[in-house]
Amino acid sequence: MLGNSWFKKEKPLLGLTGMGGGADSKLVAGPSVIDNYDVSGGTAITSGDYKYHVFYQTGSLTLTQNDAGLFGPTNSDNSGNFDYLVVGGGGGGGATRASGNGGRGGGGAGGIRSNSPSYPFATPDTALTAPTDGAPYTYTVTVGAGGAAKNQPTYPTPQNRGDNGGLSSIIGPDHPGSGGSGGLVASGGGGGTAYPGQPSGDGGSGGGGAYGSLVDGTTIVSPDGLSSTTQGYPGGAGGSRGGGGGGAGGPNPGGNSDGGVAVTLPQYPGPVLAPGIPTGPAWGPAVSTGKYAGGGGGGGGYASSVGGDGGSSIGGWGSNNPSYPGTGAGQGIEYTGSGGGGGAGPGSYTAADGGNGVVIVRYKYQ
Image (cartoon, rainbow, N blue to C red):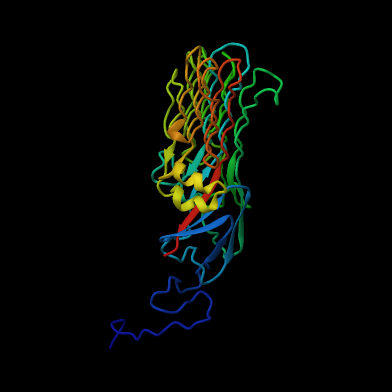
């Protein structure tokens, strides 16, 4: 036959650089081939076609070159791109036993950085990818702690705003860069206020204002500078009760003591990921279909006033007023980055800490 109208297809030779064998091989022949990788770090979980790596504390995500690895640019199932979820620590609630009988502000939820299509402020897929030179690569993973509520007597000053939560991040060695060099930063949530006029904490989502206050915490842009820079929502201003902390899933209107709603990301379901979390048996049902970063409820106001609910049942609930039967504030659910509940009045019902953040990456391997 003439020209290119006929040719004999030969089986690739094994062992040559950049070449693989078999009809189902996902390696592409040619000198520009980039090697695939094995992925390690955190708690590894396999579910369906996906492999997850769950970090509840600071650690490393390591990529080690392996021609037969399941992650990399030559695997069409993932093309060398991770799915990722980075959640900052939740803010602490405004402390009790300050002067005045009104409710204190709830803590804001930690910020979120994710390329999930379910997240309205999604960041790009290229923010976390395989390196292009086949070299080993290690990302440093930081998980932010929840902010303290700073109640007395541990903290003697009576008018303490809750602490902001700590930031969570995934940082590559050549950050800041472009095209997947690493660098995803979720700020911690803002702390709730303890008395009228005291500034609420600004953060991933803002802390709630104290009773009788028009002051509430705002959401700040992410330090990583990636678009979208938005990480959450502002907290709520206080009324007779403390304002609820902002959540990652929606705004908290002024005067509303309930915590802001969480964001729901079904790619990260609680029951699947619970084995990677120390509080897994309780954490899995709480996170359920993928709830993260709910705001803390504001504390109850004057006599017979109950505290606000925690956002999406994972933010901490606000304390009831001491003259009303009930309990102190609830802590934000650990490893969801949810805000702690605000305190109420000068009595014994205390504010609560924010929940620690979490970092989760996953990739499709088949």
